[in-house]
Length: 94
Image 1 (tube, rainbow, N blue to C red):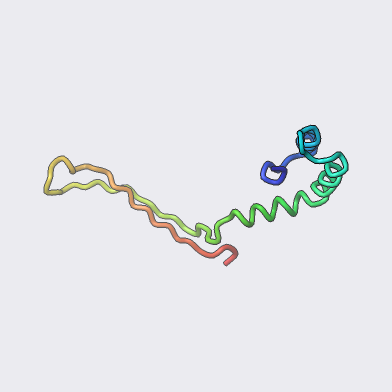
Image 2: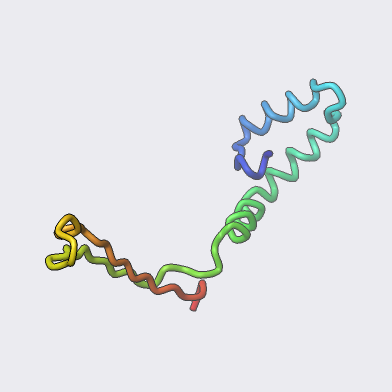
């Protein structure tokens, strides 16, 4: 919960206080250890979560256009817009 919300120190303190008051929650000593760990490793944990949730591929280029059909067998399909999208993907960092 702490890492997914990327809690700042005020949010962390409120969260840990609530956890110590909850039935079957953590002790105040455990809360102090968690708070110290989060303060020392917040940046690394946040970066790790971002890297784990990022796609392996990145968008390198994108082209798009909208075409209108001017001649078809059925009159009701004339002037129907059609979007054409081309995306080029590449590996992250390459």
